[in-house]
Length: 319
Length: 282
Image (tube, rainbow over all chains, first blue to last red; front, side, top):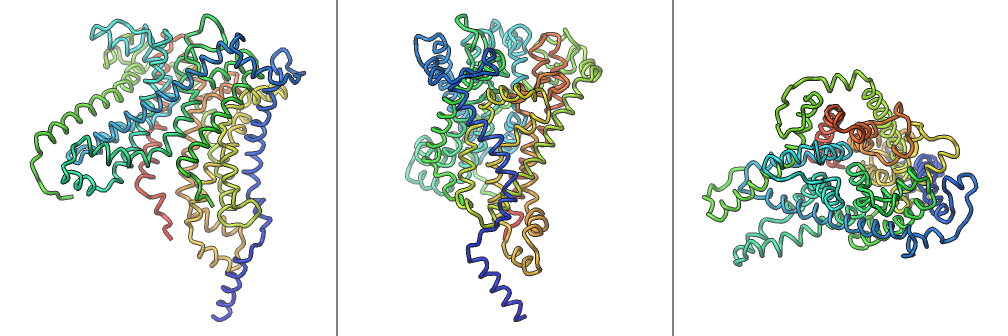
């Protein structure tokens, strides 16, 4: 009994003294090696390749070209910039519109579902969550079929109610609308779930107190619901924007970046930067330009993440 | 919960029914597209250019064609290899690292996870140009194992999740084990890992399900049809001759999506029920 107490004391003593356990690096090595080799080194090499002319022509003997690739993307007189800049603008517009739309539709449905008079609300929630559960790759491809101009069921339904066929994935404007709507279909359940969680965390007494003070429905929503929800969902809205910014699947699997531009083959009307970089690599073997676009994206992702950490204090408590 | 039964006011009733109508419309928009896929999968070719939800000549022709050519089973096999390898790989990488961060003392412990998270802020699919260029130079393109390996790098977030979970495993258990002469290896294998099983399952299954939606790296690395994953196979079906393949695509999409959707539903329910969070309350 006594010896046990002494051992406990010794164990505690050992715990309080800071002693490096070298075996820890053994435990860490699988993670450190994979992250270094598969994540950090490719990132560093991407930065390096962005300053070379690596491409199909200079496949084995790339040379250093300085800022030439960056100049090509941002110099308005360069034919490449005439693709890059509209693609860049569309990427920003897409990410912004799609995040905002997903969020507000999710919030709207969450508010409707959070009605205590609606007894069957759990059933509705279970059904509305389905698009989140279906793997996004498969459902995006399904939508590519449903939106087919000649054979798709969407136009068949519209035809039934007397609306002429809409060139969903074919015209530049409708292709962009399609991407945003399909992405809404895929993403609103996540936002809805997050917002419902936020709504349920609001104490009911706040609403009662507000009603007693004579607050209208709108006032209660504006001054109680929105601020509370905003606080809970903000840490998710900014990463969601950063995610949409590089949402390759949403674009490439639906339209393949098309319809094609007349002026250039490098990027279509719906291509975002990530899918443009993919095409640069695989279709045109311009590793230099793809890497340059990736560097621009890295800088933007870093910027969004920094804003997010500032705004939410995420990971601050990480020990 | 028994509540006061009070009659709803007119405005409450109006709100309730308007909400219901909006939600019903949303439900129709969610369900009907899926039903069309089911319909298309049972419609033999050339019979599906209609808005009808009931197949005009229902048959299993599409399913038969899918299996007769054998390609679907190859995609399924490849995707399963990828998913299981990634799931297991993630478990090894994250559990060892999370254990070190949770239980051991070493230089870099304090800011280590933060640094890893920052390093992984940049999604690795943005490096496809370098991956493709590098693999092409050493002749390692079109290899399923390379495709798996390339994806193993992204583990920082899961390490962070698991480390927080390991922290909830009471340290008194460790101390008792140390008293009995156990070292880190025993504590890791016999105490922390078994108690963290729910979280390990979550990481395993989310990695597994997530791997089915990966396209950009698969499209970069894999080239020949015999190495296609489900994603690449489905894409090749629908972007090829559309009119000819839509029925087969629908059948393939249904067969692949159904188990994953159900699996996701179960895990989600499992997480929501608090099983994961509360299982080892100290």
